[in-house]
Image (cartoon, rainbow, N blue to C red; front, top):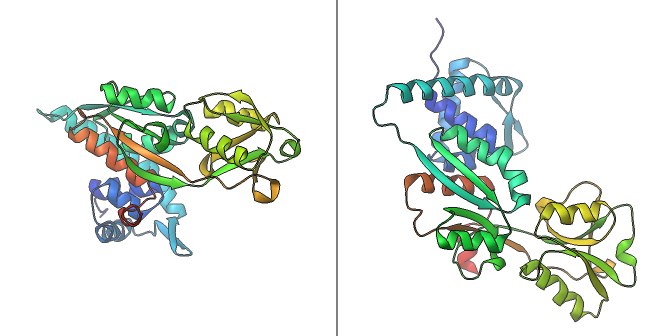
Length: 294
């Protein structure tokens, strides 16, 4: 006789598959890591197949685990549709999220897709704007939540959730960084990365000119890929065909990039809590202990 599958276990399994980590999935589904591990052990017992394999100290989906993903998605979708059809008090919510275009490119297909699967009754509307404008929209209450570089929104307090290195980046197959006056592709004058970059170059008397200015990360990346300029980008935005420049190339080390989660004063509903928790779990890498130590 076939065993019945547990919907809650399947939700947890999909969170792991989407977020790539038992720890992050535990935060996303509001369970302890030991509870998540136990759920996955029981799920494997039910289907009588291993759905994870060890990869060093990490776990990844097995071949059967990859097969299970589609079935789990279909079962959860049908379960949620059924419960919604017969529920007299179905919880429906809407969240307005703002983020820069480079984060939108990475968040929309992965993190937000996972959030939609875990929270099918919550509608997420996304706006991609420059970080200054995005911060102002949160302050006015036109957006509920935003993800922005910390230095660009000093008027609005936020929660630092991610820290990553910031790099000078040039095309890998050209030596434009060797020119006597280096051409730069940077954000607008309000951009904190631009201020840091020009201050450091002024300090070492390195000649430069700002040839391309844009609040769009895609435009700055395009200038590098076309061999037109050197840009300043966070580590997660670096593409193949780019070269990271260091002090041996005549470019001083940049300060790290802090990513802040902003929340409007009016964003106090459970739907807002759910999205904030999901974003922290999916892209956050800054512990409370690290921030307290600083």
